[in-house]
Image 1: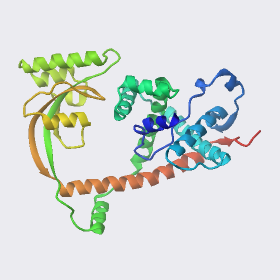
Image 2 (image 1 turned 180 degrees about the vertical axis):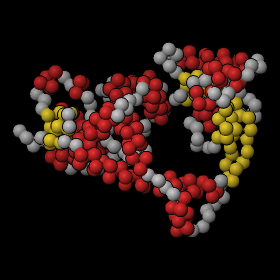
Image 3 (image 1 turned 90 degrees about the horizontal axis):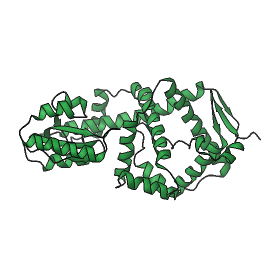
Image 4 (image 1 turned 30 degrees about the vertical axis):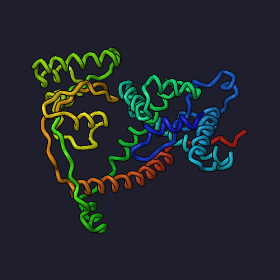
Length: 332
């Protein structure tokens, strides 16, 4: 069923600057007979959108609306609306290509694995679920890659336009009134070694290497030295794996759970996340009163998101007005 596809992909593809519809299936996946009867429904700069691509997206959109209990508009109106979205997406994809933006396979693999795990599946189970719906993991990977590319472009083009000043945050606080309830959090000063998955290192190999390194740590070898040599998190590896003070919500759930359960100085067993296997050590804990700070962060994020949504719409209108568009939907 297509509704399962919507649920699975929806878990991992919400864009931070606003949700865009999923990109259409590539023309290369169309049967030869269908391609022979295909026609162009829109020219966008140097690119084109085909009737078959539009048909696929209309079916997908209708399924998504049905899954949310929303009645779809008439076929004519739905086709017009979907094609307009595809035109705007095509403009963005062209901009991304012109800017040299690309999503590498490591980042893509991490995102696909995260989507699978967010649905409580291994990558193998995820692939089986897709196959049961008549999809392939390869086609979904390209769909995810496209969404990530759009997100990267939007972040570069839109986020840079937005600024939330301290005065705006204070003004919002004054309008809301009151300081709110006290918020006390537990922070962990921690370090880790990440054994990530690479084209030359699969899951089993990464786990075994993590277990070997844990044995060496328990035998007295330097955590910092092993982190510098082996950790795939190059940012922290240069500092011997040091992460500094870590707050709730700053790490993935599996990592955070290990932080809360470890004794001071204890090295964790290999902890699996979408990034690979972690060896974690908590060096210190403390309680922090972050009432005012937490409230200001929440307000700043809410103001940023509000501005981002508004700015995204403005930017999309700008790039659409600057593009050459020949809509041939009604041409016969």
